[in-house]
Length: 347
Image (cartoon, rainbow, N blue to C red; front, top):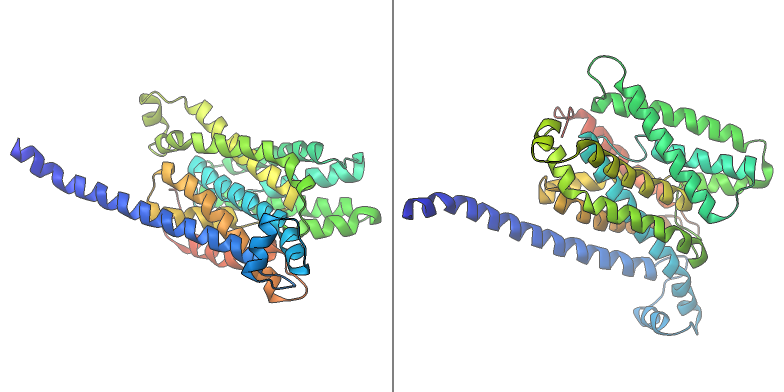
């Protein structure tokens, strides 16, 4: 009895240490999210005081500062939702493909969703939000299937580098086709070109509300797939031996990632690298358990996009730099670092 207890002590100590680290990391991430929300409300073309922020949250705006805060509230909400969706989609994609390079931008789902929305606008006059969201999700799904099919050809199957190369090639092709669709349409060209950069500026509640059911379904489905991703990480044979339906698990995870990235792109445009950077940071903090990675990827993604939007407002005041450009500056070096690592073959 004493021997068993002594042999279990190191494992219990390590488990307690992991739990303490997870709790500390969660506290830091939640504090960062609160700070990012406050900064998003406080800074822009016009700075406001904390008293004006509190007043704007409690009553209809009465001063210019309070009106500025009221205008930033839907923008902050959109950045929070979009960042959480992209971070969660990236974590799900990386877990599903066991590919450290997986990201809605790199694997082409953002480009596919953007192309589908532009075609709907230019060729079918699709102006209402809900049809655009459905079309974006369809485009994201077709692009993801195309990238995986191309990467699966040849020896070795869909390796991480082949997926990244196939995603880059297909994204470039779809971006060129998107430009070809936009050029003859001067009536929508200016609006679409600004949207293609990716950002959350000009958000309003009527724009946000239609996408909420899609994001809710995607977020819930992704979070419920944490156990499935943990089993898939052991390999298909091991997952099947533990009673997991591998095909159903893959469909569930892929579907959640496609819905999240497609719906977000329909509203914000293609914002890249959030889904690449965030899961790696969460993996460094919390290990490889997707029960921790997925929820904290959502929190971290929201914080990253909020801070990127704030930085974009401050860099060129009174003008703005779209959040999609800021995340590209952050994510591109991280992408190069991941590619250069020797352990890029699989997670």
